[in-house]
Length: 148
Image 1 (spheres, rainbow, N blue to C red):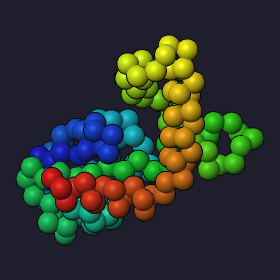
Image 2 (image 1 turned 135 degrees about the vertical axis):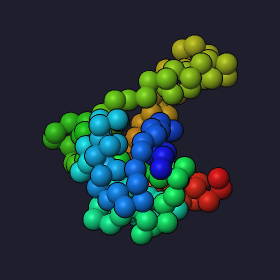
Image 3 (image 1 turned 90 degrees about the vertical axis):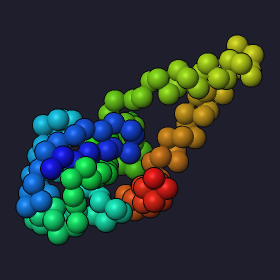
Image 4 (image 1 turned 120 degrees about the vertical axis):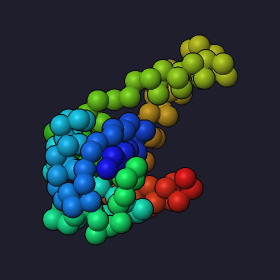
């Protein structure tokens, strides 16, 4: 059977597995395809966390099923080693998001104010992001998955 594994940021991959494949086997394939270590992966199916030692059939995963991948915080690096471990930045920042926001701001603010507003927005975004827990992300994922 073929499965789609989707990360909350929109990236996804397709892989092959059998109903008797263990969740840990799926994680190994995801690591090979997306370079995300198995230890940093949490897989969800219909809002339920999948345990590594159980086969996919125990969760009712069928052909063409969609599994959500949540990347644990260990994939994120601290901004400064002297800071508390709660302040994180993505290992690879999504520059296009900030570039698009800059273009948007340029339509509504004077050129000299765009960078100031953008920097303040980034600070606020990082502050809110650092306060998210895995439970918060799971709740968001479950809510969004139910809308699909």
